[in-house]
Length: 285
Image (cartoon, rainbow, N blue to C red; front, side, top):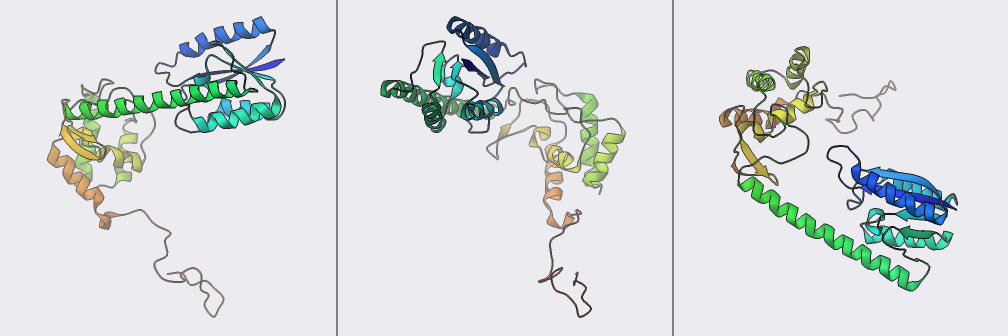
């Protein structure tokens, strides 16, 4: 019997995949004990709560529907599903194709009403855990913002060290120059060109584009301001790269609609590009 071994870790901060490795060891042992031939489907660093497509899980469903898989193995039911709607879809699919479901913690026989009830209860509990975790995270984020602390984790902000509390001076110099250039009349494209020409890159090592320059110059972090849910809530505890008045002047300039320099394809007049003149050519204005 061919068994799909589904392995998933919601968040892999360091890319080590250790949680997936632990799941793999236990799931492969279960397959060996039952004489099943394992086929791995791995969604590492992938949440099941957001509703976004999980590539490996989508392949698993397709292979079940195609008849290539006769059993599904997971470390626990919450590795497979975190949303009741996905569980219901899986139950229907498993019923149509007579799929056996085994987990390290115990089997859930989806062919019986008690087995389906157990799986549904587990799904509701998992969803409740997600909602409680979300509420805790939102409250913690608000407290962090009120205390003026930078957001922990995630991508390093260009101009700062990974902690967010120390300025990376080699990068901060370019950011200060960018504000000065903007207020001196330079375009975002011109600033991006100067930064790229000088070898200054984004935090990911990519060249600068005008939209990325705009994002940096509009970011209140560089004026030492904390924003939570779109509102300024406190002064940051980290050192600012530019004074607040410089940041606000730059934002006002970037928000000025008369400053738009990007060409647009929008029609300015009714029927422009649609109507034809007597010679047969389109009217363009």
